[in-house]
Image (cartoon, rainbow, N blue to C red; front, side, top):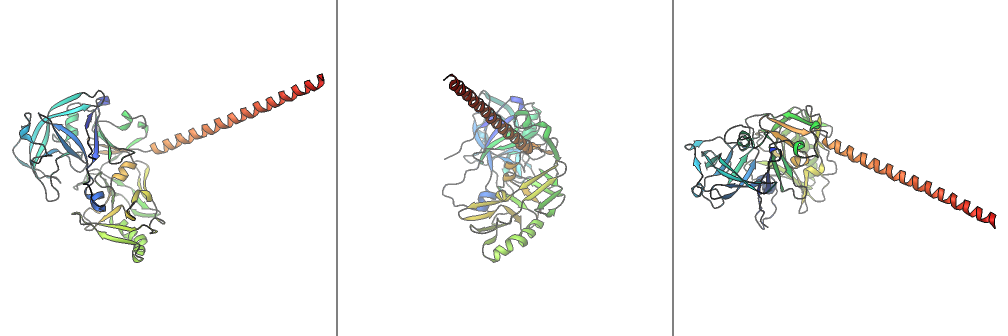
Length: 415
């Protein structure tokens, strides 16, 4: 079934909601671990642009900063010649990015749907890049919404804030509980401002470390450990939604190979392979009856600033498909980045907040503990209520029995 996703707009508390979906997998494709979980795991939302309207798939990018549309004339792409409101604002320029290297700064009109009353709202002269040439690493997608830390005129969030459509540069991803391929990207505020399940008292921020890599959303965890073994300290760790798994660093690769996979590989229970992906990655998979999960410890990421330990357990890092167990932590062959990259399973498990202006990543540190404590209190109160009901019932039955005994005695005396 073809999935359709609509761009939703909401003025409540000056936030906008982009409903996203996962790029469709071609029918009758066999399962391919690398392709399905690392290479072809992109999320998109539909954008309505131009006059007359064109509905274009726009892919959500944490690794890019620009709002762009492809200039290649494919049926699924934006066609500037069909739009009466299109404007070219510059000559063809060079850009340093991961998806395009040349393009024109342009503008056009966009239509959003107000989520509250289903009314159309038109925004005129929104700036974007009409990309004309790809890069060595990637072909140009139909469109992209860049969320990387970079405040400039071709950034989607920057333009919304500049026009006072949103109140802040904060944004969060919410994955659907029933279908993790769907979700919402909410821009313009923090979750506790529009969702009563979050408490602003527990929100803490960690500065995002900016380097020259493609991953601008990164923090330094003070300690990363596997059980009692410390993998690394103060190492940079990045976040993405494009991987349905994780990339580990060299130290963890050496440790997990020596202490877990080497013995199982010798027994022919597990296997090591190298992806054909451009970004060469080692990955491990095992037979369904392998004991690979039995002695696996939690992977812990501790942040002193957040005062919180994020945990990846055995259920987070192993995938069972077609009688095969896949290890969702992969490792670079060439060690170009040599860092942890935490993908969608982490982002789904832990509700992170990103702020482009403040250049921080936030987390409700005690939210999970608060929820557990709340449920414990409810259970405790429920048990107390049951006990009180039983006591009152017992008292009532004893009184009833006593009254019955007195009535019998009175009857006996009268006789």
